[in-house]
Structures are given as C-alpha cells and as structure tokens.
Image 1 (spheres, rainbow, N blue to C red):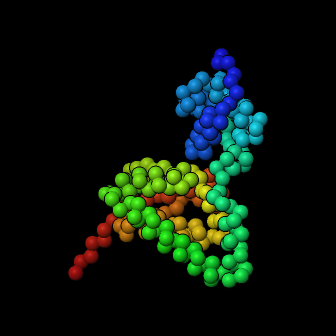
Image 2: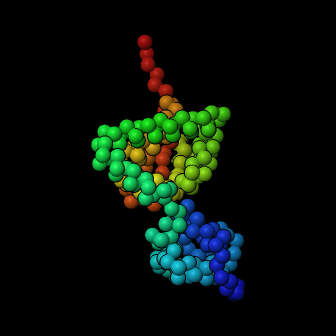
Image 3: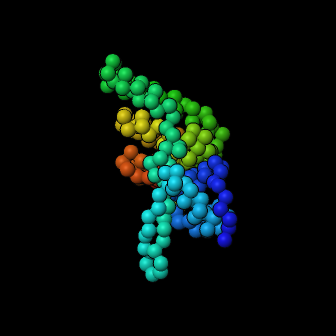
Length: 220
C-alpha cells in the first residue's frame, strides 16, 4: 500500500479540478486520471473531506460491491470563485435601485456588444467551426469558465464547467440571455446554438449544443 503523504496544494487542485470538470468520480477513476494508486487517491480524498472540500456517497451499479463516489461540496465549488462577486452584485443592485431596470438592461446590452467585439477579434483568424470552438474554449478557460468542447455525429457540444459570473447572473437573468446571444453571434448565422444544461437552473455546468443550420432551398 502506498504510504500516506500530506496532500499538497498542487495535488488538491488536480483532484478538485477533475471533480469540477468531470463530475462525481470514484477514487479508482481519479487515480487512473492522475496516474496514482487507488489507495493513494482514497487517502488524499479523505484529507480533502476533512477540509470540507469533497463528500462521498455510496451507490450501487448493478452486480458487484457498491461504489463510493466523490463529489465537490459547496466549499469545494467555492474553490473556483466568482469574479469580483461582492462588487458586481453591489453595482447591479445600485443600478437597479438608482436608475431603474431599463438602465440595467442597457448596461447588460453594452456589455454584450463589448463581449462580442472582443471574441470576434480573438477568433478572426480561425477557419471552420471546429477551430473556432477550440480557440473559443481556450479563451473562455482563460476567463475562468473551464471550457471544453467535443464533436458529435451531427453537432458540437460546448461545455463550461464553471461560471465565474454565476452570482451576477443569478441577480440579473438578462446576463445569461446575453451570453447565449453572444455565443450565437460569434458562431455565425449558419449555426444554431442551444443551451441544454444551465448552472442557474440547477445543472452542474452549462452545456451548449451547436449545429450547422441546413440551407433552405427555395424554388422560384
């Protein structure tokens, strides 16, 4: 059995990020991903549990022994903090109270325009939807969204495992609407973007389905 070693910040970060990006995992699954022994992973998870960052639940998967599955606690999720949460919430509430809801909508619309312009410039050299998504995922990850993407049979899936503006979006629903419109704008008119999972609605992450729109053939 592997000797127990106190968990380092770097190791803790790896465990937490895997649980954040991949969802609930067994110690064996985490061990395989981190190339360590199952016992070593279990001991590290126990240490994280002592710190209140992870929690386990036993589940049955058909025939065989029940499996212990690990997931992040609210404190573990807070390891990936929202950006300037307190100040942002104060600003939203101040605009709403002092200037009214219409003024807040104008601010959100102005942010949407700025976001679209920034992303358009960042993606200006890309060719093809796959390359565009790859670069966009990298850009969004640098902003704290832990983004990834994959290609499926007739669509692409774009995943954001964390939302650094979640508290602001909860306070102002128009922000999420604006985000979806921004996705649509930068992907182009020939692409349909649909949000299928939504953190604000209680899902673990935000997931977008992206499909090429079939050309409409009209007869003269």
